Image (tube, rainbow over all chains, first blue to last red; front, top):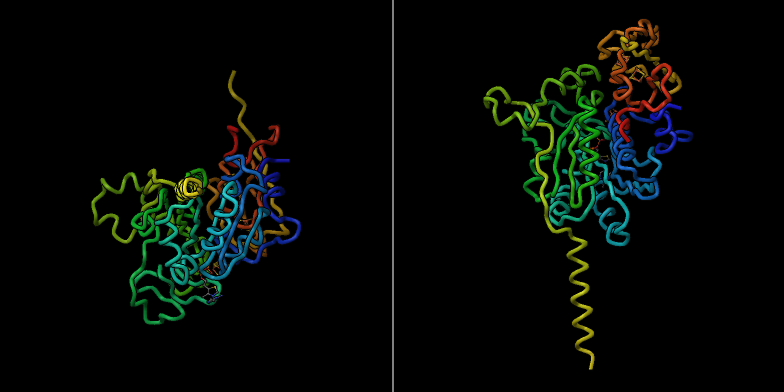
Length: 281
Length: 81
Ligand SMILES: Cc1ncc(C[n+]2csc(CCOP(=O)(O)OP(=O)(O)O)c2C)c(N)n1
Ligand code: SF4
Ligand code: SF4
Ligand code: SF4
């Protein structure tokens, strides 16, 4: 059997849940493929991983992957993941969320998780819309773009998720797309391996809800859009600002060392224990 | 001695294919045509260079590229392990 077939058999609930529910050509499946290859390269077993997801099309990923999985409530993948990490620090926590899930209803949890720096990985599939519920605009829908709730064009301005994560204090932040797949494999691998809070924002295609309303109604057209609008972060600084107007950077945006929350917490516990022991007559 | 050109086979698992057209549109060698349901058909298999673009981008895990005569380790990027 080819290695990739072995991975599908090992890491996917291939005999129960496939074909999956996502639309033909939806980038969510491409992200899932990238994720299992990254996990395989890191040599992690199924039992060492907890995949927590929220609600939405992206959130359905936990149904298809054969790890310890948790399909949490909308916007709360990170809060459930936080609880598990504190109780079972030896496990590798990965949270998968949509843009609405992570930065709309779960936006506050997201920025505070980044600030706290617990060792886990947040994967945010940014398709610029609420896909599952019918194409309402999300916090990442571009200004002027059309949505079910913005028929005259979106009046609000979009969050840049990766930049938001940098500012909020995440240890590792990267952006990739479902067009640039070999690069995405590497970004996921680095993010999961990083000791600290990692964020990987993945620009993806929801041609069904976003594309159709914005002259990109099929996956091929959206994929071309991703290809043409991505600028490698390492090059962006050398390019004229006009030439990257309306585009986005891909690659690693931040990789920095910060004290890991669990280590800090252990230190506090040790100090408290010692104090208590000393106080005993 | 000249190195023998590598040859690849494209295996499509039609039970999972949703005819999205990504593999057909992006294959750099036009290996695939489309059948009446829009699903990929191998029409030019020998031209395949084994880049695996189709395998990585198939959202439905329906494509496997096999190198002819290889031991079955070509998986998409796990090669050096
Ligand atoms: C508390 C709560 N509020 C609202 C919903 C309805 N709801 C389900 S998914 C979703 C948004 C999905 O968008 P996103 O998170 O971007 O994921 P996508 O479907 O695009 O992958 C909403 C609002 C819900 N399930 N729970
Ligand atoms: S609605 Fe959009 S995000 Fe959901 S499965 Fe379809 S293409 Fe993917
Ligand atoms: S591996 Fe590359 S060349 Fe071969 S069929 Fe797939 S996309 Fe085409
Ligand atoms: S990319 Fe996959 S699902 Fe889409 S047409 Fe090709 S084989 Fe079918």
